[in-house]
Length: 356
Picture: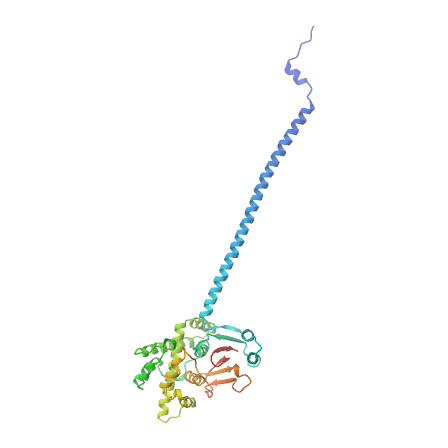
């Protein structure tokens, strides 16, 4: 009996498998996986490279922007500092010897003399700093008034007894000084019928500012207000014209007393012996009217200023080092109770403020 034949499917299942076919399959999957990983790595590497490049570019951009803004900000700050410094008529304190080294570098006899004078102030007079004062024809008045305000000094005794705002009218109506209409306001050169009104406003401003500063007990606050006031040229000039007028008023008072043979301070007798200031009118026309315009105060004028404000003005005249005139006082004979302000000058024309 013939054997029964199996179906084809069963014969296929029983047929032994070829081992090489499985290896090909494994190799194929490995190759596909490797290619996929390689592709993914290239994509990831490209993305990372792009991201790093973008980050580096961004950092470079912000670095350039930072440098640019920093440069612009530095220039702007420098501009503001120069502008503020230019407007501030009394500068901040600087080391005295550093200032001297900067200003007097040469080896001329005069430069050597000036360096020795500054060393004298630093080591023996205990002056460690200096405030530079704007060089113009108001700088003597500016140097004195700045110290009066910054120290909070009170009114002179004679000002406490009188309303100084009414002094212009007093000269006109009580003493008949019609010539005061020729008063000139420094570089403005203003004269005319309204001179009394302008003088009154100047004196009122001086009275208001002096009252305010003398009432402030905090040194820091006074200093801050001084910096504000002495950066306003218009207000400054009005204050200096008020000081000039007060000097003129004192000269006029002394002249009237001298005519009645009353005893007057010796400085006024010396003033009236000068040909160009033999009376109040000539003093005003030949000296006061030019102050702030073409010239500053002379030594005798400094004495009148000190007497009028009841302060002793001590001046270190550096160009007179090693002489008896190195340190002088204006006026020379002042009352002991008068407060003292100090100035230094290199030429008797321009003044700075020493800081002890």
